[in-house]
Image (cartoon, rainbow, N blue to C red; front, top):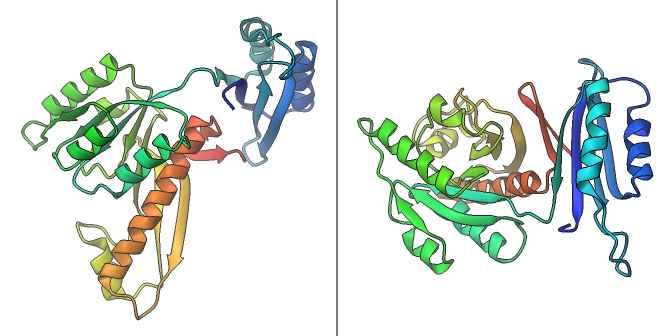
Length: 289
C-alpha cells in the first residue's frame, strides 16, 4: 500500500516482543494492516514485519506521525537489541536494471513495472551490449552502454557506480547481466543487488548448463533469485521454482522453460524486496507473506 508504513525487526528472541511493539503502535494510534513474525529457535532469533495505515480511514484527514513514532521506538529498540528499519510507502524506491544480451527477464520486469506491479522508479538501464537499447527507449528509460572486458572491468564498474550514485539508486537488479561484479562494487549495495540464474549449480557449470543437464537426463530444472554477495552465486536465496521435464524434452525445451522460471523467480524477488518483505540474517532470508 502506498499509504502505509512498514517496520522490519530482527533481534534476540525473548518473551513479550510482539506485545511491546504492538502496544507502542496502539498507543500511537496505528491501524495495523498486517503483522507477521518468525522465530529461529536454533539461533534464538526473532523476526517481525508490521504494516500499518498512515491515515485513519478514507473519511479522516488525520495521519499517523511517523517521525514521532520513530523517536519513541528507538529507545525500545536499543533496550531489546533490535536491528530495525522503518519505511513509508509514499516514497517509491529507485531501481536500476543491468542486463547483457538475453532480454527475457528485462522485458518481463519492464512490463510488470509499466502495469503497476512493481512500486518503484526505474531511472536507469545499464548494459554491456546494445540489444536492450530499443526496449529501454520504448519504456522511456535512459540507457547507458558500458562495454566490459577483462582489461576494462574496473574502469567499467567505476563508471557504473558513478551513474548509480548520480541517479540515487537504492536497488540494482541483474536481469541476466553476464558479468561478475567485484567485491568493491558489491560492498556499496549490501542486500540490495538481486541476481537470477538457473538452479543447476553446482552440478552443471559453464556456458551451456542446459545442454549438460539434457545430456545427463535430469528430470527437474529450476531457477534461483538471490542477493549478490562477494562470493559468486552464494548470496541469501530469496526465491526458487522448478519445473518437471521428461525424456521427450529437448535442449530447446529446457532453455524455454528455464527462461520462464527465471522471469517468475526474479519478478517475485524484486516485488518482495520493494514491498519490504525480506529480512536477511547470516546467509539466509526470511520472506514474510
